[in-house]
Image (cartoon, rainbow, N blue to C red; front, side, top):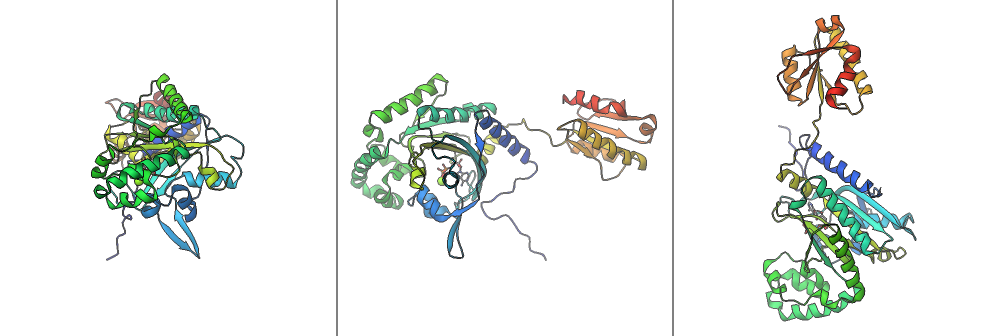
Length: 424
Ligand code: ATP
Ligand code: MG
């Protein structure tokens, strides 16, 4: 017997039943970023491993255990686990953020070797935005408002909470790091292995733990905000005041440090309680040091990424329905001449009605069978062309979604009639 192949663990097919929702999501995302003047950038899926190690950070889940890395004739390459590193690499390589502002977006597959579960896959998709050359709180506010607008367009604003924090400057974090390490050392016995190791290599990452016992210990740990100087405070206050003025509510979460190393100042996540443990639908923040760290001229930067699988899961969980049917009109034709003519008419209609989704019966059969197919196609209308219609120079139009008689329309008038019916 032939071997039946299956998808690789943690990777998913998106089938025709689901793809209209994906298309809708992608369309709305593209339209939204366009409405803010952002431009698309497309990067390769494969980059040098060193790029991710240097940008994401050596002591992170992603780099320590989640990357798909392989040897390519002596070069270590990796499938991208996120988009920021490649985006920054591309911008530096092509000199497009040298002394200039850029508002960019990208979308595509990302790869992380994680334990697969609902909302956590080994291949997943992100839609991200990266802005270069603008270090203001206004810029942070703009990208947060942009994300809020996306939720609003889908009517899911009330299922997402904005969590907000500031990580301060690198100097402030260095000062905090000392205080935190001292505290963690006092409570060493209660820490798990990961936290013990990170306490020395990257103590802030301990705050990002998913271990409940460690979380408890952290409740009384010193706070990063105690180390903030006036500039950090001012930046954070300004951001909050713009959000306030726009009616965007948020929850300050001092434990929010985000998974990756490169963030500073503003960090945020949009989280939902509708997806269980994998509740973070969107994460982002400021990363002013990364461009220089990757060899570019210093440039402030801020961005976010939406996890599209989680976004789609959330929409499905909320029963979101507003997706287009793949077919508007199904064309039934019977009899040799009528079938031939139906092709000509169909081609004509596709030219005359932009966006029309017209499916032609290509499987033969009598009208009864063809109407069954028309029904199954989910089309709203059927066109009918048999010998009698052909003789009379008309095409029948039938509403498939309600009891109604066939309405015969002159062949020359069908385009106009369909436009009216479909509101095209
Ligand atoms: P988590 O804490 O859930 O592991 P993360 O901090 O690793 O998330 P980011 O690197 O910030 O995630 O990626 C941004 C977004 O991409 C996440 O908020 C999430 O929506 C999505 N995402 C990350 N990893 C996965 C994955 N393995 N499967 C599906 N979506 C993911
Ligand atoms: Mg993760």
